[in-house]
Length: 453
Image (cartoon, rainbow, N blue to C red; front, side):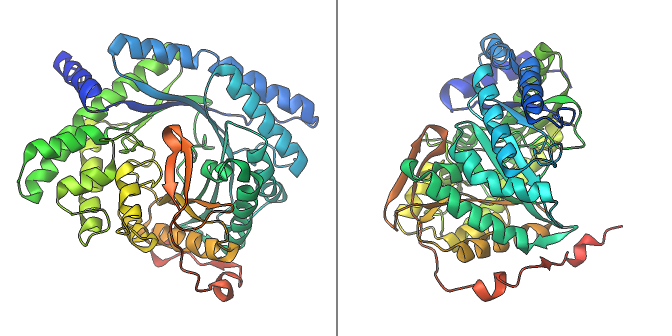
């Protein structure tokens, strides 16, 4: 469909008044041709390739911002899951690769580079095991590197050995970054059913079925949806769904336009538009506030999960109508620390970890940016990861856990990272043990719905 001039003008109004922005334009770069037996040569190949493709990324994105008057909040890069091309590396060599990624990201002027990742849903190679062991050290010795590990899928089931390993990794990452509220954990995601074209960090990576290089765009716009719901007034739920869909349709069209223009300027293929509603800590840019505007007294009230399910479904339907290039995760994110409405609900005692888990069954990802007491045990974290992965594989959707056992913190304290990472109240975690279950290890078999052939 052609882009109408009136659509652009309306989008500019949304940008100025309702916090609409393009959340990220993420350049995906394959590193599969960068391996060499000599680690120094490998590092140089990685650095050179990221600079060759990414050196103009920020500059060209800013030119598109200026041309269309639409803000692009983040310009980022994702790379091939590092464990794949560099499977022969040792833990120490992986840490050196992480430092190289960090240096390259700094050189091209981006805040985060993602893809320090492994896909171990069915088992681990020696290299993947080494990479996972290296994560706490890599994240504590870099500023811009983000990491993710996929531990389950609908086709493979849940690798509980990997879950247990990741729970220990999370605890050690929290300890090694304790001087900054355990910020390393904010850059580490544990997935089930991870997707290959997700443009949002910390979980982005450039999947093995992706081309040599690609440009993916992630849009946002909770403030625009919030304003549309408020303007609609007291309409029934079917009418309200139509209001949300019309709004998301416009946002998606604008997002794809900007993404294609950035790709065109870089001279690279355009990939997908991820239509996720991603909140920020700014007032009026909250998924929690949208749910309240839909009619619940506060996030966590009975009906919250139903409201979120309706919102998520409306987002997906509108996005698919607006674009033939919808991908990523596409829905509504509910990170606690990045959403003022969620933060207030936790502080008021209205939103518990268990209610959040129920909400993740119907939203875009999972338990995201959840801060818990620093003395939360590794086995409890493993149980939380397993629960979330089970929701993902049974429902054949992406779920994730980005949990922060904030070192030295207890319920009632806060962690504060500033910027888009925001701040989070420490949430209460049930201390009933699951050690006897998660300690069995092995693999939870794939569910019945995996047999789709």
